[in-house]
Amino acid sequence: MGEQNVTEVMDAYEPFENMVPEEFRFTNDAIHTMQINVGYKCNLACKHCHLQCGPNRTEMMSRETMQACLDAWDIGDFTSMDITGGAPEMHPDYEWFLSEVHKRGIKPMCRTNLTILLEPEYEKFAQIYADIDALVVASLPNYSPKNCDKIRGYGVFEKSIEALKKLNALGFGTGEHTIMLVYNPAGAMLAPDQAQMEAEYKRHLGPEYGVEFDSLIAICNNPSGRFADRLAKRGNLGKYMDKLTGAFNVATCEGMMCRDQISIDWQGKVYDCDFNQALGLELEDGKTIFDFAKEKPAKRHVVFGNHCYGCTAGAGSSCGGATA
Ligand code: SF4
Ligand code: SF4
Image (cartoon, rainbow, N blue to C red):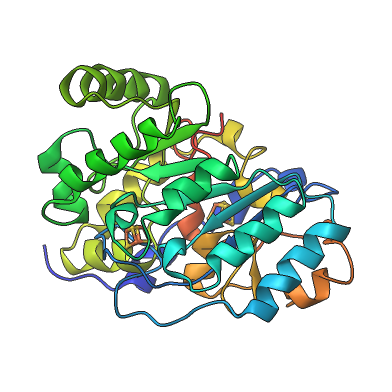
């Protein structure tokens, strides 16, 4: 099949919003999750990365914007802080930011691609995560070295295992601190059953590599960014959208992550989620984190698009895994 046009393919489906029951087209009254993307620089350049992160990206959140995130936390109803990137460890102010977060008694969710924790400049973050008792959310897209490397690049699996052992030695996954792994399908497939996948990872990573972890979340590849472009280039985007729309499950709508969060980009712009961030779909009223540093986010209408079918197929998908 020939190359497809992303917009043409996506627009051929029933507008997602029409599928969502009226009451779930809006957020909750209070917003509890603050997701902060500190920048797009990453030591890897994975094929499924919807934010198209990589070593050549230079976008980084300023300290002033980080401070606005902290100010918004202080006056808001937030209970969960989710820090992501890129590889957040590569941000020059990350250590400072984590210390400010820790001072506030927040137990942040720190996303990591694991391999960065082996780089001499950034290896200190494994200890920092232990010191602040962060919830480490580590992407390991597959327990098979071949499938993992296919997505992330040659040698990534081996390095990830080494980093996991380092985290285990610091108490992550062994009872003292918590580590969650993140599974992504290798391509245009729906995410399998999360509990079953967790059991499979445990069966492989423990006996074969001596690695321990607390739990696993399965995330569906969202049809946006680099992933959508790659599928379209190979003529497979339509097929993937057929799968996602065919598996639409209305029971997942109530738990869509956009209903309880804001996603902040490196410039302080705010989105309903990081997929909307990837597509440049800002909040409907254009409010930024500088506004939320002065007033709490109020209930709002979510900006949907047909990439949203990636969140509602089967058991649903979010940055926290299945939603139904
Ligand atoms: S998916 Fe994660 S590790 Fe891979 S390039 Fe994107 S930010 Fe980096
Ligand atoms: S892609 Fe974002 S806005 Fe759309 S349903 Fe998922 S979380 Fe909500």
